[in-house]
Image (cartoon, rainbow, N blue to C red; front, side, top):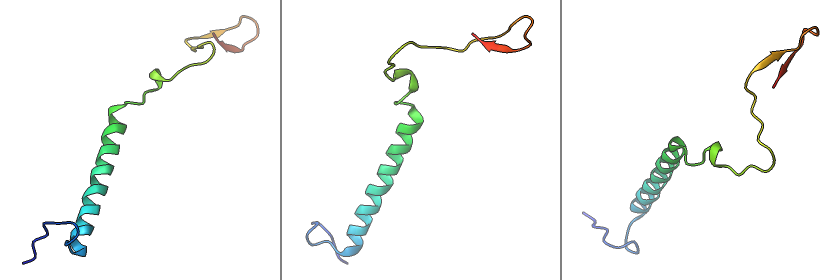
Length: 68
């Protein structure tokens, strides 16, 4: 039985396990951060006026709709 107490003396399989654990941890971290919504659109900096479309208004006589 080979005990790997040092990275220098570790065999190749131990290195593969370390890389696999690091990769899985990275993917899990990315998924958690993505689902938590840390980078929300509400927190983005806005340059210029903020325009919000709220209701559709029909212009009398023209039959067209305009968003106001």
